[in-house]
Image (cartoon, rainbow, N blue to C red; front, side):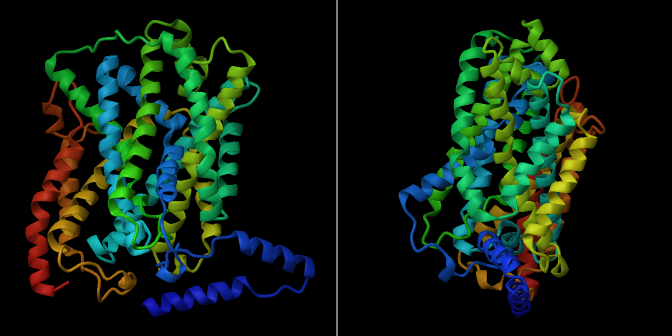
Length: 497
């Protein structure tokens, strides 16, 4: 299998580098090929990786994730604390902070496998769940990344429409965000890293101006409503939502560091990603909490939120005139830095799903991915609240279950056996995945009976508080955690892999 993948890669490169009959076309092709990243899901051999890692490289890891998440879609997540769950400013802020950092820890853990293995995240999943069962996780990851693309386009379109005072529709704004994202993603890792290296700067400036302009109108004295049981349920549900928003990046955590050498420090990688992602998410979520708290005392903000979450963000710049609108454009275009890594990871996911898809060049799959989430954003542009609340929670269920299985496999069964990273495409050397699949499905069953969504409330979730509580993440993880070790022990005893 590994040999066939190498043959396919060679054939792809040969076809891409075939000479053109036209001199002009040949020059253009050479220029394009120089920019395009030709590698797809194939393992990056150590000879093609960076020779060493410096302190600046670890800083770049953190900056990449900081740029990715200090964005308007994460501001919108923070709004659900006061407005969706009637939580106080302090309760919302604490849930957002600890939820963001706990989720970021899962992303940071998976990021350490990039330099170790030279494999993409969902290829690494084969070592935890087996060759075929891991495709379930890969498919779900594609849905996550395309879903994020849809949300990014939606929020960006809303802000651009608000800046234009109705002269630009949300539809046009969505298309603008999608096209710029595509232009970066289609060329691959080099422009991706270059873009993310500096994308944080204008976003941070715009956010700090928003703090200064809108901060005095935040209602920090806002109190939570509901009895003790309801209040506990709402806190847990919002905490889980913030955790889901953060940990959803875990299935892409290793994708962006496969060119780093195996000597890369695991703990430095972990810390860099943890604080890069955790700090940016916390800052953005807290801005959303503050803006949402202000809508309860500021009629103008309340009216803006009735239009869209993007309009509320722009309302925070009231009083700055044209400069405020300029900053609104920066905030809207900043969503591209969140959209790029998701789209990139989705293209890799498509290639992992099957050998025929693996033959397609990654740039062509970038086109397909962009078209899919743009169409979804256009269709769902009036339902952002429902998309956020339902989509993020559902994605959090499976990612945390997967991480539970990965941690147990790594810490309990791989401590002495280690990993044969060269066997990434050899089904005979990878786990069968029977234990992982069973634990994954049992965990999902626990999540279903304990989920609290608009369209379904599980029987256990309904017993908590007056309106129920979303316990899906916690019960799903605990069930998977309990059943995986004995099942995996039996699998190893029977099959030896």
